[in-house]
Length: 77
Image (cartoon, rainbow, N blue to C red; front, side, top):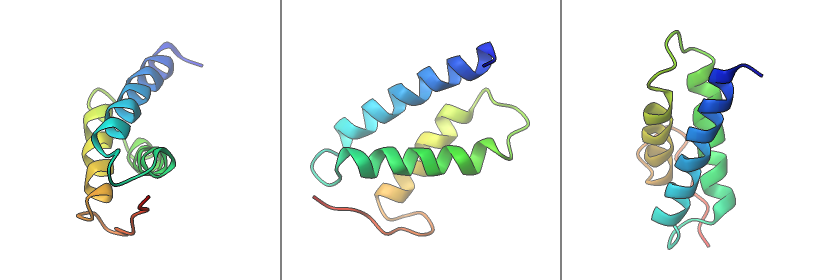
């Protein structure tokens, strides 16, 4: 694994932790993790520059979890 990949993985782990806490009243941990995984898969596959991926992934996951994104089905507790 390249150094950049490990660093991105660490950023994404922090994103998941932050969003799990933020959405703890409305979504279980698995729903949050899946939103982040889906956002990462979509954005990372098209990224030419990866510096802003954590921010973009966070925004897309939040949009999904709040019902603002496409395919906005949410999992409630």
